[in-house]
Length: 337
Image (cartoon, rainbow, N blue to C red; front, top):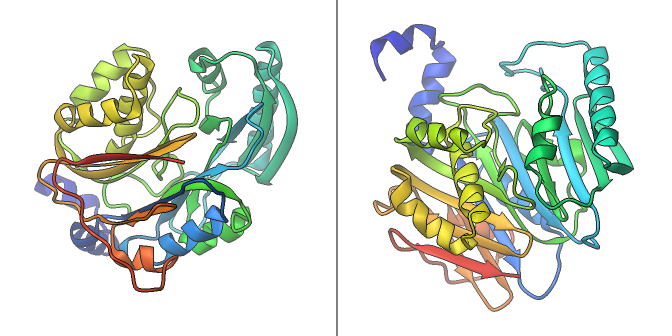
């Protein structure tokens, strides 16, 4: 980082940056094979165990038990402007107007809202009946509204992310009762981009249904890859390099690659140091770059896979004596429910 960037750093920000070099956020994930469990509560415990790696924001990608008939759309019409936020305060009436336009556009596209929940003034959850599989035009229409972002879209996926540590976000959105098969999450320390929801993980694999990504690391060819993907019609809502992985994998899958094929391709297509998780409606994958500079600990049995940046995350759900291991450099693994 050049000296020109230091002028804007506060004392607190500089301390975060120095600390971030050591910790660089934390990620966790688990998948139950052949059964469901309280994944909301389990992931909350794993992420809370990693809060020393960052608690500016926390995000969950939860794959719940649903009938698979309708889409679940999580979206925001504004930002959390609480303590530590880098966002600008807006009146709730602005959120209401954006929501009204979302409802209008949904009706125009033939999408029927079956159930609506407004957890917070800026955060909404819709269950939608929509008969088209390709969500690109749908997403572009909704996100053409200034200030509106789809956090996730899928038949079982729900991405919930906000400012604060894992327990604070879990309590705010009542996630501890969510039952499902698998989940991934992220505890963030903001060192480069803003403290806001749009920069928080997980990222939806826009516009691919039920795909989410969390990442720990740094990509060095971010802008080159981003420009190539934008030329293919893909969108970016932040300047966080982690979002690139979600869009990169989604594009590979749109082109016909399997999840594992797309992840293996990323080891040569993405430069930098990284460990990341990708989840789909029925699978969970992990990838570690060829330098293996970012930590990852993994536990695997016949009915459960759990992994995290540190073993303490796994111990939050498996306190008994267990055997864990570190994946190899350049390794990709995918598990099915």
